[in-house]
Length: 158
Image (cartoon, rainbow, N blue to C red; front, side):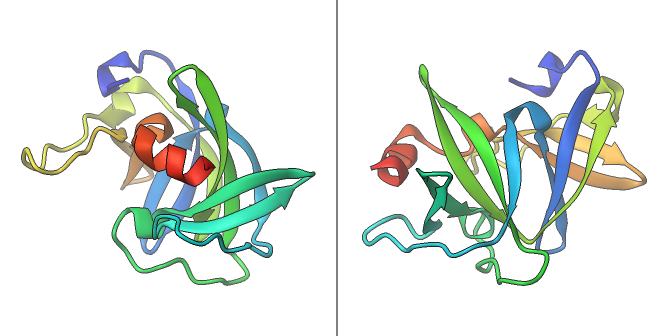
């Protein structure tokens, strides 16, 4: 889905990674959890912090800071896990995404969202749905379904 596919007002959950604000479509968010004990799993990608027990289900937790090449998310009183549903082909995978803090749910009109910047051919920015403008600041709107390759999700799931 590109920014041209956004034709109606959508609600987004905004959250912080380092000093940047990101957003996810609330339809992809299941719940937000306080950061709890994450059990490490050997031989997983660097950005995978481990797994949590969510009401009897094993849910992989990924660190979005590490996925984006930033410093690992530190554990503070505001650190949380955003439980999301990711579409992989015809299957829905439940993941926990570690974030520095959750901000708020906002509504954005299509005219508030611009296309993601093109940063050359070597950098893949397909996972950025668009750049939203809200209260005088830019918010990167993520397409969680395009954030991971199928190989990465298979490793995380395995």
